[in-house]
Image (tube, rainbow, N blue to C red):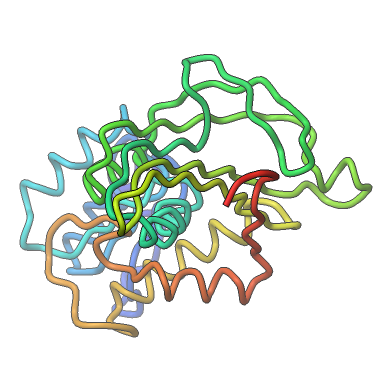
Length: 240
């Protein structure tokens, strides 16, 4: 696909949107959408790879709505954090999860895995949406709690929030976003919610230009849909 401007597709009016699920160094998917006025969703551009896509979109800003959703689970982690953040009057720190470049990430069952702070679009999205001055995202790969229990690989994301509540008192909260079947159903849902919104199937029409998931999708609605596919939020021991 990368070297073909037509994406290897037949020329037809039957397409409703373009979703880039893998990195396209030629940006042919974006150009294909712009040429035809189709909504475009990108979930494959890392934070350091985003520049060409943003510039190409900006040069034809009026062509089509573009959703930059190269976040974890296509934006679902950001939406989950924003849902939890409603209990705070001010957020000072968001950790998904750890204070240093090399960190220890604790799983749902207490197992500790070595992790690494990574540059990901979730960080600026959460910082700008909440005003929190400290936002960090750590990633660890290892045997999941699902595997340790003899089942399929599970997905687990620890979310740590620190700030003050509506009464001005210090507030800390830790939650695990957990899905027993791994990241695929979560990413698929994130993409589906984005496409649903861009196609006008829910909410007001989306204007042309650049958008991110938190600008288009209501966190409460996202939480409902996550619950429908088996996602749970588990409190860490000793935390509210």
